[in-house]
Amino acid sequence: MKRLLAAVLLACLLAGCTEQSPYIPTGGGFQDEGNTPSSQGQLQVQGDIRLSYNRDGSLHPYTATDLNNRSLLCLVYQGLFATNDAYEPTPILCRSYKISADMKEWTFYLENATFSDGQALTAQDVVASLRAADANGFYAGRFRHVKSIWAGNDGSVVISLNTPMSNLPLLLNIPIIKASQINAATPLGTGPYILEDTADGKQLRRQPAWWCNAAAPVNAPIIPLDHGVSQNQLWDLYKFSGLSMLVTDTYVDFRGDYELWESENGQFLYLSCNTKSPVFSNKAMRSALTHAIDRDALVKKHFRGFAHSATLPASPAFPHYSTSLAEKYGYAPEKFTQAVTDAGMTGSAIVLLVNREDPLRLRAAQSIAEMLTACGLTVTIPEVTGEDYLNYLNLGEFDLFLGQTKLSPNMDLTAFFAEKGALNYGNLTDVAANAMSLEALADSGNYQSLHKLVMDDGRLCPILVRSDAVYGRRGLFPELSTARDHVFYYSLGKTMEDAKITE
Image (tube, rainbow, N blue to C red; front, side):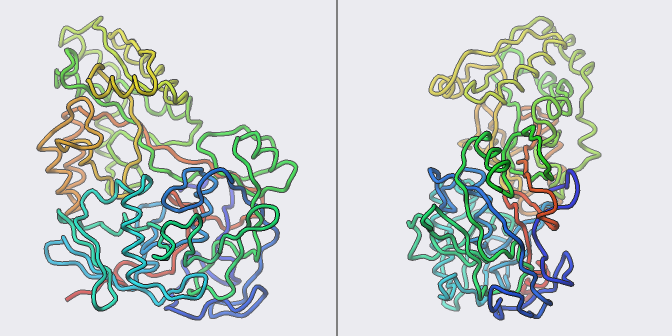
């Protein structure tokens, strides 16, 4: 994501390499841990680096939820593709690919990659990995349009879809692990590091013969990992134990010498209107709601800049997010006040539902309630958490609902508008919006029409997309390039056009 202070983190530590290193085909990895010449120049070994992890949390790429644990994973694992901060995919383990004419079947051919134990990557590994990811929480939502995944007789991986999709590779930055280790606590990957146990805990050790000559995001031979969970623990590690970096989903007022970056995490904050509400069954009220929300104020007050105002239902970094369209639905409270007056709703009481177990979201809801009150409504936020909160949602006992979900990298909205969509709370079912959502997946030129339809109807009111904060010791990480869920982003210098097979 965008850089917040100055220089960034850890890629391209090979002397003379550029930000976009030329693509190097399979094979010819690093030969040792020292300053060994490679095809890209002289390898410069990085100084001491210490990272953190939560020893009580998972380190499996499909079940890990701790932010610092997840930040380590891209050093150990690779996907078929990687996605940069502009939501553009680039091939990694995929050597080439082809698409059927109806865009419902994709075939991927693999690089001659190896796992950290030297065994070759196979199509069976990829198939087993994607199926396992589908069965687990972190990536499960990405497979809602997948019918089947199988290994072809020619060593390829084939994915069959139930709807045409032109941007499937955006979803395939999923870490690939060995098929035989699907259930292992820390399965092997094809990345530059291996995670291993030590007498004191865990460490990352760089592989001496990594399968690809990429500009490695980190080149330190050994990276010790310090256990820490809370922000106070991590800050103490930073101050007193030489911790080099930490990742958090909230801004922390550290008072040391550090550099600060952000990495978008895809968490989407939004309002959902209950279409059976006496107030928001009125389409004019729903469509004007967007004008009542001062998104920039919420970002500044509650998220300390680690979020992006999203007037449309997508990340503003997404290539098909139209800033000119977004301006038409921006903050203009007088327009919502007029809609309240015209509908004869002045003074009407509404229930704004939010999960009070999330203090940050609750504070945002309280600010939104103030904004709506200023426009003429009377807002109540119930005292509900846990099971009661879910019951309110399922029973539709609210007028507005402040929700948060992780948007898929291709900004698929079908979970909101499909009849049995996983995010369809408050009677959001909308045949037209669901059909347009599918059309956008098939042809990215339809995203703007989809977003206009959603905003004019008003059942879904976007608020913002959140980011993680990345703190690094000043000067230690001169070339960091962060991306969504990928603190140590790097590519092989190969483009999608390079890899596409045209027939």
